[in-house]
Amino acid sequence: MASSSSAIASFVEAAPPGELQDVVLDIKTLTGEDPKTASSLEPAFQKYNEEQFTTVKLPGASQAVIMSPYNALGNARYYDTESQSSFKYDYSSQNASDVQSYPLESSHADLVKSLLKSVPAQVQEHYPSATLGVFPTENDSRIAILVVANKYSPNNFWNGRWRSSYLYDPSSGALDATIKVDVHYYEDGNVRLLTDRPVSSSLSPSASATEITRQIAITEKKYQEDLNRAFGTLNEGTFKGLRRQLPITRQKIEWDKISGYRLGQDIGGGRSR
Image 1 (cartoon, rainbow, N blue to C red):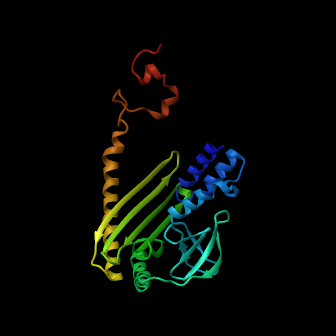
Image 2: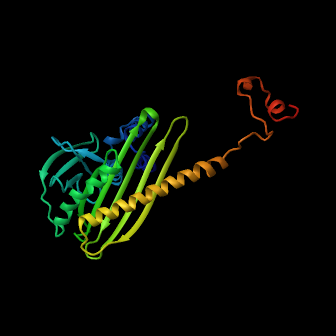
Image 3: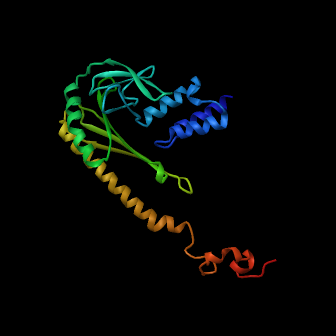
């Protein structure tokens, strides 16, 4: 029973972007039970939401907020620095509730507020739609800057997510980043792109929000260019090497006559037995 629960949890945690509900329905169909009501699976749903930077709109709000390990308060509660509020998240209904005041208390509060103003310009310029979160972390020694952008196109059988997390240390100027891209394409097949790029850069100690934002823009532009080059290499080299351009006979198959071929004799060129 424990191994079964562990297997189900792994399915939840590995759900492609925008497809958690589909995975839940598949699990329910296979097991006859709703995984969202199983208390043993709540840690899996929590891990999925926090690692994927799931977003939710607070009651009465127009902008979404991020859930992550950096703004988790425990007991399914999270906080948002921009609205200076905390909220409870229901993993079953995927709604936020019980919003309470949560003032920003940090020795770097001014920098956090400045980043909340400067980073959105960079985000809006490069993403069709994205959500930003800025949180003091690691006992207020560093600042986490999170960006998540989702693009779902289920009618065209693909969904994608870009996640960036930056940890800035005001005392040393170190800016450590991790950029993750997750794209799932599932028309007549099942192809998934998963990337995980760690990047480190150095700024001056107590750098301004403008300097940090500029470095974020440089980092993400370079990674986008690297991805574009990698796709070109895959398309022109790796993918072409996966299959023959022509059958072993060096002749193209006449697909309109395929039903009339006798496999061994007509395609292989020898006598069928």
